[in-house]
Length: 151
Image (cartoon, rainbow, N blue to C red; front, side, top):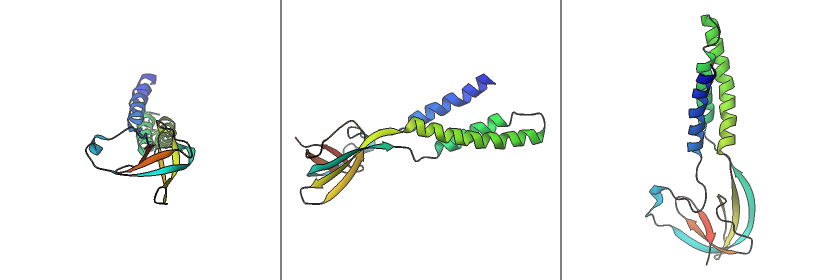
């Protein structure tokens, strides 16, 4: 039973890690390469740390399925198998949701930038670049907005 449980947990863990997005200003998807973006110069007004969590239901679904399969092996009769599957699916869904949140949660920064035209914009991104209030920056607008230093 322990070996089969490990065989269920290991793929789930790998799937959750694969679902973790790269949210930094220096990460680009292959589909973004060669795409033109607009850039506007501005000044960082404020910076605050944020926590970025996945909004996918994959953890709940995978955990529920794995729990249902594992729970269906309980007992000897049809009723016990059905009740075990239902209970396992509920418990597995709760555990899968918690595991996904723990495995995919990332830190980030939310920047408020006053553009040189006077408009304020906010951009949330990963922690690979840290800008400070008062620092000049560029806001890159494209598939995903980014804030980078203006040199």
